[in-house]
Length: 218
Image (tube, rainbow, N blue to C red; front, side, top):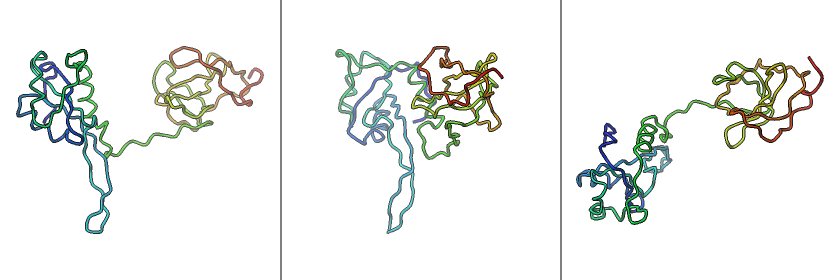
């Protein structure tokens, strides 16, 4: 169904259906007077037909056998178990689990933006490696130039060396706040303050800073 629904008009529950049946029960729930919200995941798959391999788009439910359903009366949900293809309702302490409107709005927004459509061409993300020249493109450090002294970590951040307040400092910063800048250089004669300050202002463990960044005054 379309996504032009008014989220606040419904109470959002979660029902369970057989494996791979989420897309099939959508129309059934609409006929029963409910408002199903099946978030779709799209991806390319390779299949063989008549001896020839070809690509096609596969569409599945993001949450597998779980379907989010809007009902008008949150206290009257037992009838959902009688809908064809529905095997149960997720409950907490004998009450149906309610999904907040904010979560529903975020899901709808993300789906509309193609967050789970892997058939779309994605913008290439620059590789952030040790020694890469970078420039901060947003936030309080906007415009600062430096270079990475670590590869990006699993949390999406990396240690970068910047010249700040007259000294070379190592800062832990999210790589999404950085852009490549091959001309970025930090004065390598300025003593590095070894404490690593994060983007939010907290201090973390000290990284291993290349020795060429240590030394006397510029």
